[in-house]
Image 1 (cartoon, rainbow over the protein chains, first blue to last red):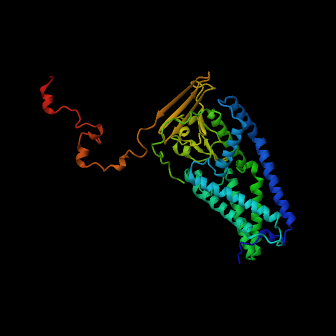
Image 2: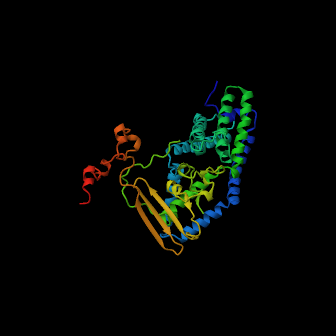
Image 3: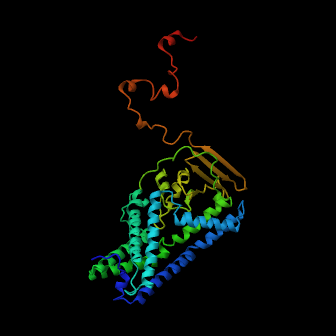
Amino acid sequence: MFTPLANPFADLATIVPPAIMQIYVVVMALLVVGGTLFDIIHKKSATYFFNNWRSFKNQAKRQIGAGQMVSLAVQTAVIDVMASGEFCNMRRRVAHLLTMYGFVIYLVTTIIMVFVYPTSAPPTPASVTVLWYVGILMVCVGGYWFWFFIRVDVVAEGNSPFRFVRADLFIVSLVLSVTFALLWACLQSTSNMAWSYVFLVLYLLATTILFGSIPWSKFSHMFFKPAAALEKRVAEANGTMSNLPPPADAPRKYGGGLKHARHY
Amino acid sequence: MPTFVYMTRCDGCGHCVDICPSDIMHIDTTYRRALNIEPNMCWECYSCVKACPQFAIDCRGYADFAPLGHSVRVRREEEKATISWKIKFRDGREKNFVSPIRTTPWGSIKSPADYAPPGTEALKSQQLAHEPEALKIDALPALSRNRFKQGPV
């Protein structure tokens, strides 16, 4: 019988030593760090970012003090990162929030279960295991919603939802990883061991691709986009505004504007 | 040189894909951001530049009229019904323009489909659709047969 309160990693520890699971998690973390650094160096993103930062600073019409910089950083963190405020379309924003927070919850609870409660003793708190499943479900809802109904190359350009391009590497490996994790955990708890091993292998494969393909996927956008959002706020604050004209001094009285094509 | 996308600003929303009259703005298959796939077919109409809600698209004009060092950027604000331009010359001069887009709320003007179709008499009439009421006059100024026969007066 399926029990959502069972720690699937503790059950797996009867076959796979906890040390192996912990080494795997550490290797994945190192792949994230190494992959992101390689991506930055290879694409010269950091060089471009700091060159841009310096050029905007030289053209600045107003100087920004340390206090104001901290305030801009906090606004970026709260509005642009935690609330995904840069999205102009509400459906895209909600899907992104579900996927982002679901992934974070799933990741944190996985680390807790693997490192703090790797075996049956001591028992894993029910809140941790339930949150693991909640995180997975959030990623599935947000991820599949985006994959089938929100992607512009599908709903606006008419491509098949099953057309895979390199841009899909991150989202596909992410949703497949959590889907296989869910299936593995459910089947393991119902003692259907043969199929649970199949999905365990698929889960490990998808997870390794997710964290190992960082130099070729969009994974590192979670580091780049906050930096770009901060740069945008600093450009507005120091008066350069990326050469854009300032907002017009006129009342907002004409309504919501054009109804853009409702593909998604 | 036509439009190009700042991929750090773009979030792949597809507004530029929808609006491009040349059908050359598409989603890049590597980064899922907007991309001008055929720059030499770009009319530089600025539709995508104006439509982008993240101001992630810019246009580099051809060098014969827009040499390097210039900047032309636009901000379209639908709620205020204004469009603002900032033009920077390469010698440092700057010109700013703000123009209205419309003077009535969005959606307040009836589209042709919202009117009843014309009857047979209206189709036979010499008058165009919505004349003379749309011109805010009682009748079109036209010579009648009797007046015409009077000759010059």
